[in-house]
Length: 226
Image (cartoon, rainbow, N blue to C red):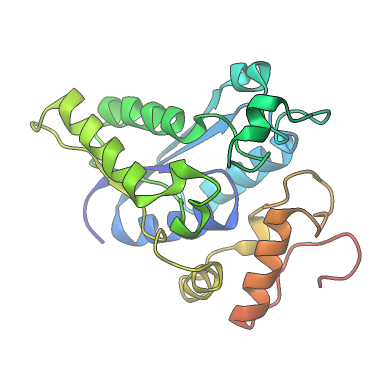
Protein backbone atom coordinates (compact mmCIF):
# COMPACT_ATOMS: atom_id res chain seq x y z
CA UNK A 1 0.00 0.00 0.00
CA UNK A 2 1.26 3.47 -0.87
CA UNK A 3 0.87 6.46 1.43
CA UNK A 4 -1.48 8.10 -1.05
CA UNK A 5 -4.88 9.76 -1.10
CA UNK A 6 -7.48 8.73 -3.64
CA UNK A 7 -11.02 9.70 -4.60
CA UNK A 8 -13.27 6.73 -5.40
CA UNK A 9 -16.38 7.31 -7.49
CA UNK A 10 -18.78 4.79 -6.00
CA UNK A 11 -22.23 4.10 -7.40
CA UNK A 12 -22.77 1.05 -5.22
CA UNK A 13 -22.67 -1.41 -8.14
CA UNK A 14 -20.31 -4.36 -8.46
CA UNK A 15 -17.83 -2.66 -10.81
CA UNK A 16 -17.36 0.34 -8.53
CA UNK A 17 -17.23 -1.98 -5.49
CA UNK A 18 -14.31 -3.98 -6.89
CA UNK A 19 -12.65 -0.74 -7.97
CA UNK A 20 -12.97 0.44 -4.36
CA UNK A 21 -11.36 -2.79 -3.18
CA UNK A 22 -8.43 -2.18 -5.51
CA UNK A 23 -8.12 1.43 -4.37
CA UNK A 24 -8.11 0.28 -0.74
CA UNK A 25 -5.19 -2.03 -1.50
CA UNK A 26 -3.20 0.67 -3.28
CA UNK A 27 -3.83 3.74 -1.10
CA UNK A 28 -3.76 4.72 2.55
CA UNK A 29 -6.58 7.30 2.50
CA UNK A 30 -9.82 6.92 0.57
CA UNK A 31 -12.43 9.58 -0.11
CA UNK A 32 -15.70 8.19 -1.43
CA UNK A 33 -17.93 10.22 -3.75
CA UNK A 34 -21.50 9.36 -4.77
CA UNK A 35 -23.95 11.19 -7.04
CA UNK A 36 -27.69 11.26 -6.52
CA UNK A 37 -29.20 12.39 -9.79
CA UNK A 38 -32.77 11.21 -9.41
CA UNK A 39 -32.15 7.60 -10.45
CA UNK A 40 -35.11 5.33 -9.74
CA UNK A 41 -33.09 3.27 -7.22
CA UNK A 42 -31.47 6.33 -5.64
CA UNK A 43 -32.25 5.39 -2.00
CA UNK A 44 -30.95 1.83 -2.42
CA UNK A 45 -27.79 2.97 -4.18
CA UNK A 46 -27.13 5.53 -1.46
CA UNK A 47 -27.57 2.82 1.19
CA UNK A 48 -25.03 0.63 -0.61
CA UNK A 49 -22.64 3.55 -0.93
CA UNK A 50 -22.78 4.29 2.79
CA UNK A 51 -22.22 0.66 3.75
CA UNK A 52 -19.31 0.18 1.34
CA UNK A 53 -17.68 3.46 2.41
CA UNK A 54 -17.91 2.32 6.02
CA UNK A 55 -16.51 -1.11 5.14
CA UNK A 56 -13.43 0.47 3.58
CA UNK A 57 -13.02 3.00 6.39
CA UNK A 58 -13.38 6.09 4.26
CA UNK A 59 -11.43 9.10 5.45
CA UNK A 60 -14.39 11.15 4.22
CA UNK A 61 -17.44 10.69 2.04
CA UNK A 62 -19.68 13.03 0.10
CA UNK A 63 -22.99 12.71 -1.71
CA UNK A 64 -23.53 15.29 -4.44
CA UNK A 65 -27.01 16.15 -5.68
CA UNK A 66 -27.33 16.32 -9.45
CA UNK A 67 -31.10 16.42 -9.66
CA UNK A 68 -30.91 18.53 -12.80
CA UNK A 69 -29.93 15.36 -14.71
CA UNK A 70 -33.35 13.97 -13.89
CA UNK A 71 -34.98 17.28 -14.78
CA UNK A 72 -33.34 17.16 -18.20
CA UNK A 73 -34.69 13.65 -18.79
CA UNK A 74 -33.61 11.40 -21.63
CA UNK A 75 -33.06 8.19 -19.65
CA UNK A 76 -35.10 5.30 -18.26
CA UNK A 77 -32.86 5.39 -15.18
CA UNK A 78 -34.38 8.68 -14.10
CA UNK A 79 -37.84 8.60 -15.65
CA UNK A 80 -40.26 5.73 -14.98
CA UNK A 81 -42.48 7.03 -17.81
CA UNK A 82 -39.64 7.41 -20.29
CA UNK A 83 -40.60 7.26 -23.94
CA UNK A 84 -38.05 7.45 -26.72
CA UNK A 85 -38.24 10.54 -28.91
CA UNK A 86 -37.08 10.76 -32.50
CA UNK A 87 -33.81 12.21 -31.20
CA UNK A 88 -33.14 9.48 -28.64
CA UNK A 89 -34.31 6.70 -30.96
CA UNK A 90 -31.86 7.85 -33.62
CA UNK A 91 -28.91 7.42 -31.24
CA UNK A 92 -27.07 4.15 -30.73
CA UNK A 93 -27.12 4.57 -26.95
CA UNK A 94 -29.35 2.30 -24.83
CA UNK A 95 -32.31 3.98 -23.16
CA UNK A 96 -30.58 3.56 -19.77
CA UNK A 97 -27.81 5.95 -20.84
CA UNK A 98 -27.83 9.12 -18.70
CA UNK A 99 -26.72 12.00 -20.96
CA UNK A 100 -23.10 13.01 -20.26
CA UNK A 101 -23.20 11.63 -16.70
CA UNK A 102 -19.64 10.30 -16.37
CA UNK A 103 -17.91 13.52 -17.50
CA UNK A 104 -19.90 15.38 -14.85
CA UNK A 105 -18.92 12.84 -12.17
CA UNK A 106 -15.24 13.04 -13.05
CA UNK A 107 -15.30 16.84 -12.90
CA UNK A 108 -16.80 16.65 -9.40
CA UNK A 109 -14.10 14.21 -8.34
CA UNK A 110 -11.31 16.42 -9.70
CA UNK A 111 -12.66 19.38 -7.74
CA UNK A 112 -12.66 17.38 -4.52
CA UNK A 113 -9.22 15.92 -5.29
CA UNK A 114 -7.86 19.46 -5.48
CA UNK A 115 -9.34 20.26 -2.07
CA UNK A 116 -8.02 17.20 -0.21
CA UNK A 117 -4.78 16.78 -2.16
CA UNK A 118 -5.66 13.42 -3.72
CA UNK A 119 -3.32 12.06 -6.39
CA UNK A 120 -5.76 9.66 -8.02
CA UNK A 121 -9.40 9.24 -8.97
CA UNK A 122 -10.71 5.67 -9.26
CA UNK A 123 -13.75 4.86 -11.36
CA UNK A 124 -15.33 1.53 -12.24
CA UNK A 125 -15.89 1.93 -15.97
CA UNK A 126 -15.64 -1.15 -18.19
CA UNK A 127 -14.65 -1.12 -21.87
CA UNK A 128 -17.16 -3.88 -22.64
CA UNK A 129 -19.88 -1.32 -21.83
CA UNK A 130 -18.53 1.28 -24.24
CA UNK A 131 -20.50 0.10 -27.27
CA UNK A 132 -23.61 1.39 -25.56
CA UNK A 133 -22.00 3.85 -23.16
CA UNK A 134 -19.25 5.84 -24.89
CA UNK A 135 -18.25 7.50 -21.62
CA UNK A 136 -17.08 4.08 -20.36
CA UNK A 137 -14.43 3.65 -23.07
CA UNK A 138 -10.65 3.93 -22.80
CA UNK A 139 -10.63 6.67 -25.43
CA UNK A 140 -12.98 8.71 -23.23
CA UNK A 141 -10.81 8.20 -20.14
CA UNK A 142 -7.71 9.21 -22.10
CA UNK A 143 -9.44 12.33 -23.39
CA UNK A 144 -10.60 13.30 -19.90
CA UNK A 145 -7.07 12.80 -18.58
CA UNK A 146 -5.75 15.22 -21.19
CA UNK A 147 -8.44 17.72 -20.24
CA UNK A 148 -7.49 17.46 -16.56
CA UNK A 149 -3.80 17.88 -17.34
CA UNK A 150 -4.41 20.97 -19.46
CA UNK A 151 -6.82 22.52 -16.99
CA UNK A 152 -4.62 21.97 -13.95
CA UNK A 153 -1.04 21.97 -15.20
CA UNK A 154 1.54 19.48 -13.93
CA UNK A 155 2.50 20.87 -10.51
CA UNK A 156 0.12 18.47 -8.79
CA UNK A 157 -1.05 15.87 -11.33
CA UNK A 158 -4.26 13.95 -10.74
CA UNK A 159 -4.45 10.58 -12.44
CA UNK A 160 -7.64 8.88 -13.58
CA UNK A 161 -7.48 5.18 -12.74
CA UNK A 162 -9.90 2.66 -14.24
CA UNK A 163 -8.46 -0.67 -13.03
CA UNK A 164 -11.27 -2.92 -14.32
CA UNK A 165 -11.70 -1.27 -17.70
CA UNK A 166 -10.19 -4.20 -19.65
CA UNK A 167 -11.90 -6.94 -17.63
CA UNK A 168 -14.99 -8.99 -18.33
CA UNK A 169 -17.78 -9.01 -15.77
CA UNK A 170 -16.86 -12.51 -14.61
CA UNK A 171 -13.22 -11.48 -14.22
CA UNK A 172 -14.35 -8.57 -12.10
CA UNK A 173 -16.29 -10.97 -9.87
CA UNK A 174 -13.30 -13.30 -9.54
CA UNK A 175 -10.96 -10.46 -8.65
CA UNK A 176 -13.47 -9.09 -6.15
CA UNK A 177 -13.66 -12.47 -4.46
CA UNK A 178 -9.87 -12.57 -4.16
CA UNK A 179 -9.93 -9.12 -2.60
CA UNK A 180 -12.83 -10.13 -0.32
CA UNK A 181 -15.04 -7.36 -1.68
CA UNK A 182 -18.43 -7.32 0.12
CA UNK A 183 -20.69 -8.06 -2.85
CA UNK A 184 -23.62 -8.46 -0.46
CA UNK A 185 -23.47 -4.68 0.10
CA UNK A 186 -23.58 -3.81 -3.61
CA UNK A 187 -26.62 -3.13 -5.80
CA UNK A 188 -26.90 -3.36 -9.57
CA UNK A 189 -30.61 -3.45 -10.41
CA UNK A 190 -31.83 -0.50 -12.47
CA UNK A 191 -35.45 -0.51 -11.38
CA UNK A 192 -36.08 -2.37 -8.07
CA UNK A 193 -34.93 -1.41 -4.58
CA UNK A 194 -36.21 -4.26 -2.38
CA UNK A 195 -35.36 -7.41 -4.30
CA UNK A 196 -33.43 -7.09 -7.55
CA UNK A 197 -35.68 -7.64 -10.56
CA UNK A 198 -33.34 -10.15 -12.24
CA UNK A 199 -34.61 -9.02 -15.64
CA UNK A 200 -33.03 -5.66 -16.45
CA UNK A 201 -29.77 -5.57 -18.43
CA UNK A 202 -27.72 -4.84 -15.33
CA UNK A 203 -29.20 -7.73 -13.35
CA UNK A 204 -28.67 -10.14 -16.24
CA UNK A 205 -25.05 -9.08 -16.65
CA UNK A 206 -24.47 -9.50 -12.92
CA UNK A 207 -26.14 -12.92 -12.68
CA UNK A 208 -24.31 -14.22 -15.75
CA UNK A 209 -21.01 -12.92 -14.38
CA UNK A 210 -21.44 -14.67 -11.04
CA UNK A 211 -22.45 -17.91 -12.78
CA UNK A 212 -19.51 -17.80 -15.17
CA UNK A 213 -17.10 -17.04 -12.34
CA UNK A 214 -18.49 -19.98 -10.37
CA UNK A 215 -19.90 -18.05 -7.42
CA UNK A 216 -23.38 -17.44 -6.04
CA UNK A 217 -24.63 -13.87 -6.02
CA UNK A 218 -25.29 -12.94 -2.36
CA UNK A 219 -28.05 -10.41 -3.00
CA UNK A 220 -31.75 -11.33 -3.17
CA UNK A 221 -33.70 -11.47 -6.44
CA UNK A 222 -37.40 -11.63 -7.22
CA UNK A 223 -37.84 -15.37 -7.73
CA UNK A 224 -34.88 -17.71 -8.08
CA UNK A 225 -31.34 -16.40 -8.68
CA UNK A 226 -31.21 -17.68 -12.26
